[in-house]
Length: 75
Image (cartoon, rainbow, N blue to C red; front, top):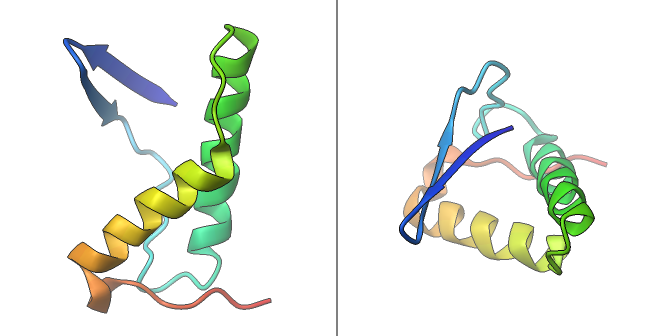
C-alpha cells in the first residue's frame, strides 16, 4: 500500500490491482481486508485503530458519493 501523509492530508497512490465496486461482488470484502492490513501495519507502529469502523465509514461515504457505482457483496 502506498500511502502518503503530509500536513494532515492522506493520499493513496499506485493502484496496480484496482477492484471496481460496480462490477465485483466481493469489492467490499476486499476493501475490508485491505483496510485491516493497513491497520495491522500501523498497529505494529503503536497506532490504535478500529479497522471495521474505518472500512464501514469509508465505504458508506463512497456509496453516498457514487451510489450507482457499487454492487452488493455475494456470500
